[in-house]
Length: 91
Length: 201
Image 1 (cartoon, chains in turn cyan, green):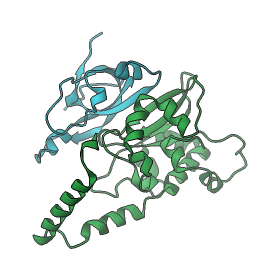
Image 2 (cartoon, rainbow over the protein chains, first blue to last red):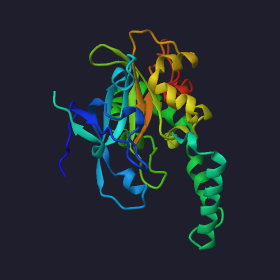
Image 3 (spheres, rainbow over the protein chains, first blue to last red):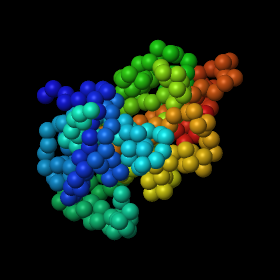
């Protein structure tokens, strides 16, 4: 399967609060960041946690400005996110 | 975060599952402890320190390490394959980047306590604390100051949250005045906190 995102792409994370296990940290919900690089392909943890097998999906390092996540701060936070959590953000 | 789980409840549940697996013959008695001990025995911050010292003395190795850490550490006889599956290792370098900005990296796992055990050994208690995990992503400059690391405002801080399958290690800056030291002596300067990013070396 072709990679959905490339380094430098702007992406927005899912904003809904899903029931059950997820690896999208609460602080990074509904936020816009920039793809750093592909970090491999792995079965989605949300599905595995329900005891089901899953096909490997792309995982990306995504960089967020602290101000985007917390409304303050001059640092950045790089979060590792499955493509399932991400949609393309058009400028 | 896992703060809603009383650790004693979790421990009791884990023991119950373990005893069921043993009763059904799927696990030998004590097998989990044995496996964990075997895995942890090879892990030590000395491994991370060796990698750093090699990177400080061999620029070509440093380049390979930052491009593909899993392949580079195999040159030193190290591996991220000690567990069930090989984990991806991402090494991030402190120092001045291509754009001239000095960057400092620090590692956390906000969701649990993911950590490169093979290269750093078991994680320190503070790394697993809710205080560190929740605060370092929001205000790393203040948290680092509490660790005794005061960074100038001009230094850009990047926090790496191990929220999926990768494990992170920081490549600290080589201290000034260490030109005459051997690789082994340099490795002796590298601390666990330096490899996590909560201290300079």
